[in-house]
Image (tube, rainbow, N blue to C red):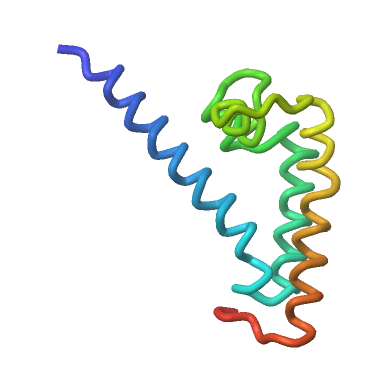
Length: 113
């Protein structure tokens, strides 16, 4: 019996859960960790884009020209422009998260680091 299909399905599921948890962590990072760590994450994200041409988890999870946000926004009924969404996610969202961290931490200490 060939369990390759089941193994692949399990791997895809694990990647999906990991991807979701990382995205959730990114959105929670302004209140969880110092803005300095958020800055490191922003730089790491841009290095990943430059070296790999995109998010490694997106490439593993979807294996086509579809991004995490585009895929799930479509699933819940939105129909975003893929190009505009990619520009927002890649070039604006990281700086918005960092800005939120800096603003939040002017009056609150990060909860974890």
